[in-house]
Length: 101
Image 1 (tube, rainbow, N blue to C red):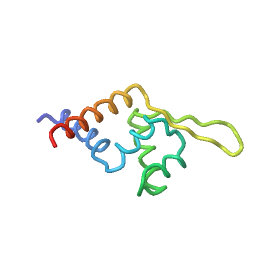
Image 2 (image 1 turned 180 degrees about the vertical axis):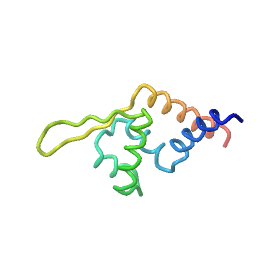
Image 3 (image 1 turned 60 degrees about the horizontal axis):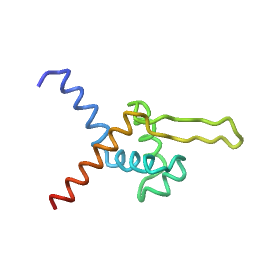
Image 4 (image 1 turned 120 degrees about the horizontal axis):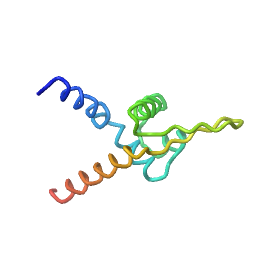
């Protein structure tokens, strides 16, 4: 495998290989937008891990971060087009897993 191919796989592994990334993407795709609501919806995730995942998924271009200039400040996340495509692929993998098992 070429070095450039390997670095592409490493990026994918960092996103999808993380225990929490798929859960975060799924919840945001299902309509949960705010960090507090995400933390309540994803059983077992800590505030620190959620913040790291949101930052990493935003850096990878899978999420948009929208800050609203309000008091108190409000932040919401949404899927980018690439994030929507990845969620569809993950759903297809889940469907295949159900069919196999």
